[in-house]
Image (cartoon, rainbow, N blue to C red; front, top):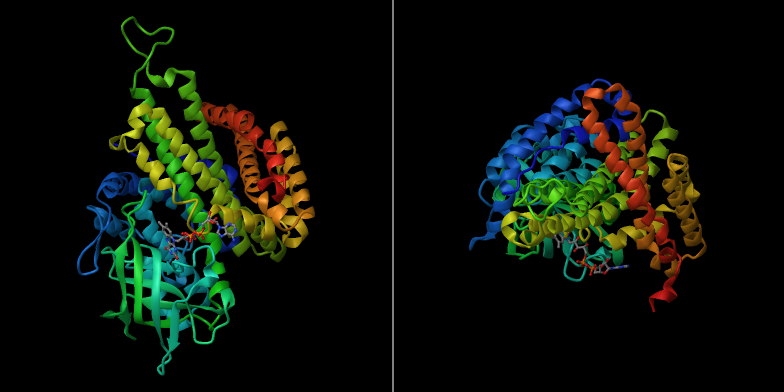
Length: 571
Ligand SMILES: Cc1cc2nc3c(=O)[nH]c(=O)nc-3n(C[C@H](O)[C@H](O)[C@H](O)COP(=O)(O)OP(=O)(O)OC[C@H]3O[C@@H](n4cnc5c(N)ncnc54)[C@H](O)[C@@H]3O)c2cc1C
């Protein structure tokens, strides 16, 4: 049975030494919130994740969520109780606006907490994650009345939220959606259509479900310019704020999936469902963009969270499983496989990639925090651009790494890794969706090359590369290769640049990970001397960061030919 323990020391290290939480604590926005007590908060969340949520992971995978004949979705054993404790502790509103009942912490602290919840049970974590996604556009673009009606309960978790974008003909191409919304005399709209692949579209853990639906009004322009955003609740809510009559939106099917079995992936039918327009008609796409960066960061976090859990499980297995002999193994005995250099290499590879991901994601979140709340407008703009540049990398690189690390976790188990009972395969199966949803990783790479590199005449990338320079020799080589690749991409717009987009994103992800690990190495060198009682922790940090810099990072410059081969090389 796979267990999970919250990596509190590693999380505290990344928050303090990589994401510079102390700098955020000094900003007026968070001066009074008590960020000094963040470690207590994390310990509390870690306990909930390890003791309450993690035990639901394997049973959730085995039974999955089920659709009954009435169209109700029944979640696996233990889910309702775990959700009750999650919202009972206020964990769904950590970084939400205090005006609507949130605790107002920086996003980076919320991200650290969500890492643990996601490691504990990724399928479960998607439910509160989707609620946060729904809070974004309503908070940014809803009327005061809508904010008052929907936000407090979405933030407290009494109600949950969803995102209804995808239709059979409209996946990456959201502009192709045809769901129809017709205005009514009373100012509401009625919606008709079918949405597919809707995460937590129906379930039994909350009193109401607030669906954010993209649809077209009569005569709307074709493509993304004609899309509007509507709030369509499962139960209609009157002026007194109580969930009442059932609305005409139903789950008519659940998908059978490779992984995240406990997360109900619903086919939703809207048959004249009552909806409220958010903001103005035809503003649906720009409105969605306001929550996109956060949603993408949180999906990137799934790569990290799964990697951490897979690593913990592989390390525990390698200490127990005995095969072969090592020098000093007593006659007739076998050595634990963790003593074999190749197994040590696999475990260290898993750990190093996991730590690099954690640093990158936390850095990205802290940049978003600075970009949102720094008092100096210039600093705010630069941080915002840094966050925008890093977001597609965080989403795509970390989710790819999550799959790779979970696969290595199976390899460490040998044959038992391929047998479901150990749980190693579940991590790999669960991880596989993250490179696909919330904009496929291919779409992230296009976003990086076509939108984020040219942003502000390339200044955000130039500033990032400058900050990365001079810390480590292999990092300098990678930075040089990125500068060359970016120059080439700028000189070859169109299909040539698009053909090199994914290898470029991989290069930047590996290098950003190298930047994190170079900083980790330098910090460990400095602090080891003054904190001898923590010597094991700092020595482990030195080993993992050195391994990353010497054995993983050198693959980044090797991608330069792939970036610069052009579209002709693809036939
Ligand atoms: C388990 C699960 C949960 C989901 N949850 C939700 C949800 O809650 N709400 C929601 O609305 N949707 C959800 N989705 C849908 C998800 O976001 C889409 O599957 C995703 O956007 C990809 O769309 P698609 O499946 O149609 O693939 P396609 O768009 O058909 O893509 C197929 C391939 O073509 C590539 N491709 C497509 N267009 C281009 C292009 N222009 N340039 C280069 N490459 C391209 C893609 O990268 C991909 O590799 C979910 C999906 C799954 C499987």
